[in-house]
Length: 226
Image 1: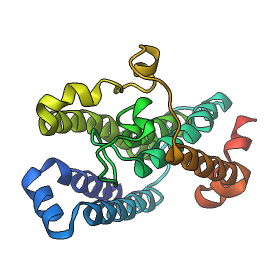
Image 2 (image 1 turned 90 degrees about the horizontal axis):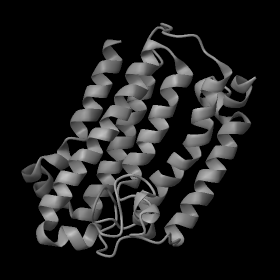
Image 3 (image 1 turned 180 degrees about the vertical axis):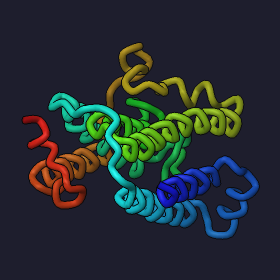
């Protein structure tokens, strides 16, 4: 359990870097925004892998009995989460996390202005119920809470950075997915990053549901439905 808590602490500390403006500015100034974001993403992925490796060393302590319907949430929400994460990574987004520095936001921001964070929130949150043990509650519950907190932090940071431009920049989007479209403030648009992200998400989902998830994590989502 100690190794898992240490890994989670390292993950959270690493993702606190963008909130420390002098440190972030120094890194961007030294390496450039694009190099900083790519490097930051690579280190984040490595830290996330460390979190999962540490989780596998923790003893299984059940908290509630598994029911087949518990597996429905991750099967339904994970493909959407993957799409949001990849579309967010590939799209310019001055209002949230992005590895692109373009001023014009990508079409995914019409869905939500925090696609990457929402993707992680849906993915991690949907895995809490289906696992039902202490290790998974700490792992996925912690990541879900961190993603939700990240949305709040990103909102504060982008509002402060954009100042008087915030109102116009955020008019065609919203925090809650599809809220701006349903409210009539935006129209659903599709661009290349969204299409590529959809293809990647579909291929990954097919791999995971046809044996990939069982091979990597020792659990078959489809078999769990039975």
